[in-house]
Every structure is written in structure tokens, then in C-alpha cells.
Image (cartoon, rainbow, N blue to C red):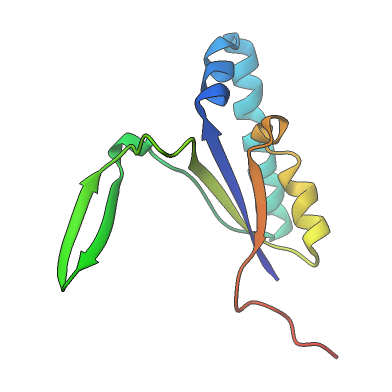
Length: 123
């Protein structure tokens, strides 16, 4: 079954990251690299990407057939998607164990969500 490990950021997480020493930031990068290597080596990794700053995003909606795109960021949003891992695991517990290794999990900003339509049949 596939699971999406969503990594969010918020202003507090950004402040913590900026307050870290270069060595501490390097440890965070190394933790992501080690997780990527393990996931790839085990065959569980399907995709992983860091996302650009939300200020570069566009919000899209369609009104009466007309496409309307507005710039981000959106002040009402306190947390934003910063990156993801798409993994294939035997159980959600296994996906949660991988998610716990994402450095942002220390701030409570990591979510594991099953990919819809990928459910295994019962029986």
C-alpha cells in the first residue's frame, strides 16, 4: 500500500531552523539523505521532493469557465506543505516509523496519509 508522508512548515519551525547552527542544519539534511537512501535501497521509495517557498505558488480556481490564478502566500494559512515522501509499505505502522525519522517530526509537522484507491482487497 502507498502512503504519503507530508512535511509541513510554519513560522515557528522556520524560526527554529534559522536559529540552528550550521552543524545542526547539516544534521537535518543528513537525516533526510539517510532516510532517502534507506527508502530507495529497500524499494519502498516511490517519490520524494522538497517544495519551493509558498510565495512562488499560485492558487487556481475556475469561475464560470474562466481560470483565475492568484499569487501566494496566503496569510490565513499558518502551515504550508514543504515536501513529501511517497512510500510503499506493508502497513501504516511502517510508514509512521519512516515518518518519525523526518526531522520535522520533532515539531509535529509530519503527517502520514494512505493513498486513496490503493487499498488492498480484504480476504
